[in-house]
Length: 201
Image 1 (cartoon, one colour):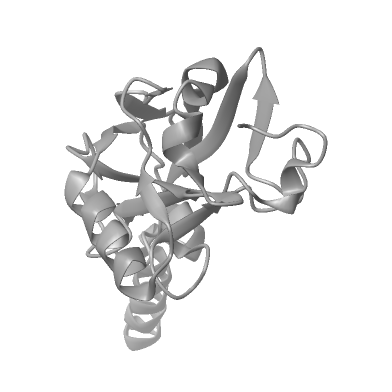
Image 2 (cartoon, one colour):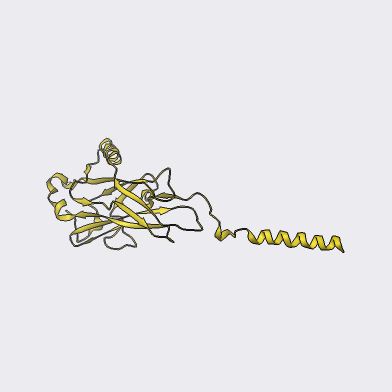
């Protein structure tokens, strides 16, 4: 009887230990890192074409025109699964090296392009992601009146140059930055058919 009693205690102890372990829904899976999802848009490099579809339709596009501004969506995302989704933020800013690298590539290919003129756009300095969320978005806002003042510079023959702006994230308050896709190159095509009745130049 004593041996049976000891065996029962061992079984109960084992079940108690199992019950104390975290379930899958409470465990962290993978390594949570932060990246810019728009940098994966083409699947080839970190080019982010604007517009990506008919204007003002967020199911097919990535920008809209309102109040004289072209607002382009940009954001961050945390990969992996974390049981406690903590709030975090990252800084957002220009990346001149990415802008120049893209311009060099276009020059080699004979594609007319130029940097998005300084003074025509504004970039939020930070993206905040609230607790419980994996990511958040903001807008790169381009003043269309200011851009129109550069029309002669942007014009190229019968068409227009592509407008290039490199961006990057830095200084996460939680988690780490991913090894890649932490920078993105926004490429605006002023001649895109997707502008429809709302040309930006």
